[in-house]
Amino acid sequence: MTRPGGRSARVRDAVHDAVVELLAAGEIDAAIPKIAERAGVNPTSVYRRWGSRDALILDAAVTRLRSTSPIPDTGSLRGDLLGWAEGVERAMRDRHGQILLRALVATLNPDEKPLEYLRARGEDLQTALDKAAARGEPVPSVDEVLDFVLAPLYVRVLFRRPIEPGTAAALVDRLLTAC
Amino acid sequence: MTRPGGRSARVRDAVHDAVVELLAAGEIDAAIPKIAERAGVNPTSVYRRWGSRDALILDAAVTRLRSTSPIPDTGSLRGDLLGWAEGVERAMRDRHGQILLRALVATLNPDEKPLEYLRARGEDLQTALDKAAARGEPVPSVDEVLDFVLAPLYVRVLFRRPIEPGTAAALVDRLLTAC
DNA sequence: GCACAAAAGCAAGTCGCTTTGCTTTAGGAT
DNA sequence: ATCCTAAAGCAAAGCGACTTGCTTTTGTGC
Image (tube, rainbow over all chains, first blue to last red):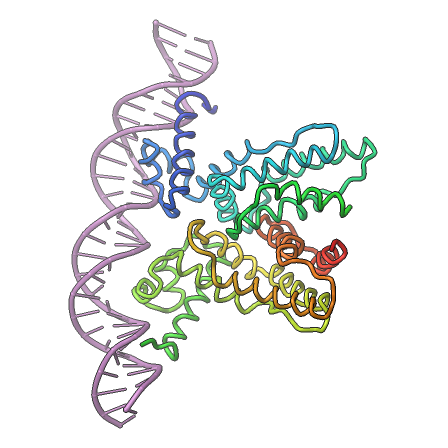
């Protein structure tokens, strides 16, 4: 029997907020007691719920990233991809978005199974491509979308190269002309 | 007055080895005393030389990555890029290479100045492109090389998607036909 | 070789992360 | 409204990371 509402939810949100704020403030290696203090929560509660700092940070990153940049349904593949990619670009130009992406990559253990979150994002993309194919449009593969659009944006953030406004649109155009 | 030879070099290498081995063994958050023990070195020496765990890991990653995949001089742009990209692919298919890339990204502080290592790699690439341009070949920009070839390889590693053999060659071809 | 000093090692002490057993609070079902 | 218990809070104890002053080793220039 689980109990997701009320106080539990408040504590979870406060702790997630504290994680993001501390990371954004440059307190990269703030440990659980520091995070708990900032959240106004007892450290023991954090230890009991998340177990380790890495598990907590991964949870915070996935939870927050999940709510960014859904794929719209505009009626054309180009519109769908543009809407999505511009959302990603916006998130990646934002300091918190950058922090969360870095935290996600950093805590992704190389040996564990793929994240449910990433799998779901890939399926969303596939759905949009299927709709376009059903309309008779020529469509790239999911891998090509990731290579052409997502990878360049992510690598810019992770290696601290600037993202100029309009980058996402240019990448989408490059993808669609290459296919 | 600095003293790079003999014992100092041995200690540095032993500590770098210990870092890579521990990371590869899944001991993601091994602290300095653990690393020092594995290296057969006194923890104090590590604290005095590197100061913090993050600085040590970044140093180990950059030092080891610096020696991978130089850009050859084959006489044609396609040959140069293929040689380089296949070296990158090889490194990224190797467990230690994956570990090092992830460690590098994880410890890259978002606020600090760009890494000398990355700047140098970009200049190497520019040099190869300039040579090709001088021969009259049509050449892409450095950014396009990074977008088309490096970014897809890196993102595959960081998000734990497999790299099929021949990926690098396919990416280089895609780049050269798109320009 | 010899002398100097940079770097490594040692030991002791401090600090803060983490664990654990218990108590208190407050969702949620009846 | 009341009860039940999941989840949060509290306190104390243990353990290990980190610091610091000093000693020992060993590159390196002469």
